[in-house]
Length: 96
Length: 265
Ligand SMILES: Cc1ncc(C[n+]2csc(CCOP(=O)(O)OP(=O)(O)O)c2C)c(N)n1
Ligand code: SF4
Ligand code: SF4
Ligand code: SF4
Image 1 (tube, rainbow over the protein chains, first blue to last red):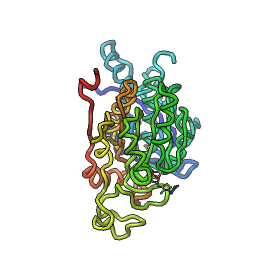
Image 2: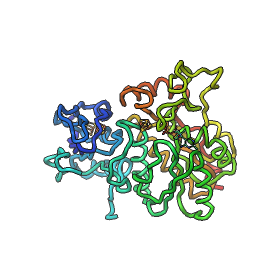
Image 3: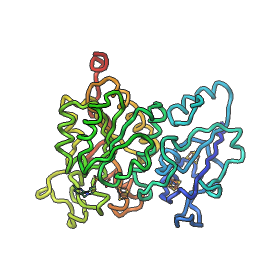
Image 4: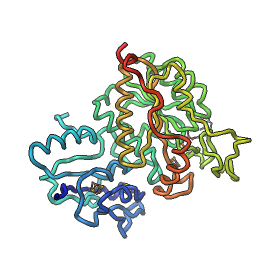
């Protein structure tokens, strides 16, 4: 079965290079950069395009650097996904 | 946040946003060391506040300890207490603002050492607020001294040969102790070192805020946490050490939960 497609966006200047996201990703999508950010930390970057949007990395990121997106799917699946959203996130769903 | 800092998904617009920084967490850099559990706990606390939509009705009390500047990050009304006195301050706040959601946020040095009397008597009075207790088994802010919660044998600045039970006593399980008091309504021990632990801690915090509406007594959510700097380990190593040395003396899970009758009466 094809895996769900996801994407992460990492705020590299906020990243403190703790590497916790790297260890928590079941897909080994993330690695640490060779470059340093302005604060002198290596930061997390996407190495392979195989993210499933599971949100694990974002949940453990202490500094809230990671934003996660997940592919839109059929109606039935979307319902399941929405219940997931309410569990995991705090985004403004109803226009607040 | 700098544009340079973002590796944006090309197809992001066709995708659903499933996780982002909570709105109630101010968009400033937190001073905590890399990988510190204080940071993660701040973040998920604000996620819960957003999810429950109670930002305007919440008042927090910051401690003395590494979280002394919590009010710089948590975008709710905040107060700052003298070392160990957070629950005394929260008692006063709740007395004059009973309709607000009130929480204290305290480390183990703050809550279980200098503030022990305030903590125990708040629980014994059944004060109707939430204690968020960050147990990292050390005094982080002052440079890694032994706390009452420090594991036996652990070397710290004030126990260079390792904590000795004979002279320093056994690590105190204060959440368990508080749970024995009838004034404590809900006591649970959680963590933030893994995605699953974070999910569970969020659920515990949601429960605790919801229980506060019932006016039934004190809720305490302990977070067994790390102090990579004080323990002199990398963040990842500190979490591994924590699993082995902290979670064995402070096992995760609910310690006291209300019965159905408690909830309905
Ligand atoms: C009355 C008083 N006594 C002592 C101190 C010094 N002091 C500052 S923070 C701290 C302990 C902090 O440890 P903990 O509560 O575990 O928080 P952490 O820094 O580990 O998060 C101490 C003893 C103080 N600020 N005020
Ligand atoms: S969302 Fe999941 S799969 Fe994608 S990078 Fe994060 S942990 Fe890995
Ligand atoms: S968990 Fe966050 S702060 Fe740590 S390396 Fe990953 S993105 Fe950076
Ligand atoms: S000293 Fe320890 S508790 Fe304090 S911010 Fe650093 S890692 Fe966290």
